[in-house]
Image (cartoon, rainbow, N blue to C red; front, side):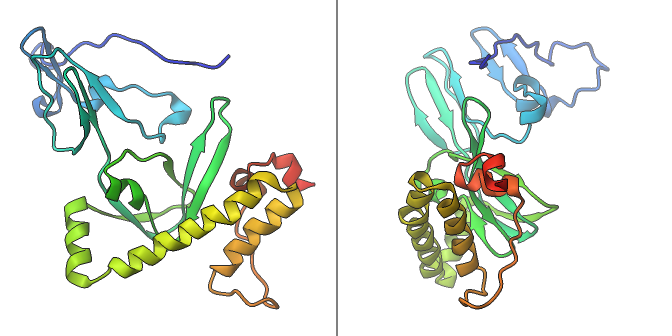
Length: 232
């Protein structure tokens, strides 16, 4: 059966006896009517096979309380605070995939990023939460820049056109390839996605070979097909 939510109780660490080995700045505190000190390791749990799935933190609080953190806010209400991710990521080496899972746990890969490519920019510019997960396929190194540093670099180095070009290519992918792999027959979906990666692999010639560096499972998740269908 599908799991809709989990609820559990936590005990704050500030009330632990001295000598418990808890570093105070990394601790947690719950003092009714006065303050609540949150650290994710003390409050946020996870399922073992979903450890790499990111999540959005929404805090429901008394109206007389206010939330404060170094993270930028997505929204603030009378009794609710929502905080967002804020970093720009670029792959130094390895491969990163961005994906989503439906309620049945089926994966859909939004894109695969390799050395020199970046990911996660649209939510960064729009001040929104990341709508997908990022997961390393291979051992990888990723360059992470704080948002303000990244924006200053764009202004000083005149890199806006390069970022705009990257956005344009992804919009082109959404408008052409994504539509075809949503409605066409399986054979056409697989051919479309492989042709797209061949075109932007740096070896786009019609008569040149292209090494398919994806597993059948990854091709299935890129096209929304079952692995058995891709194998056939």
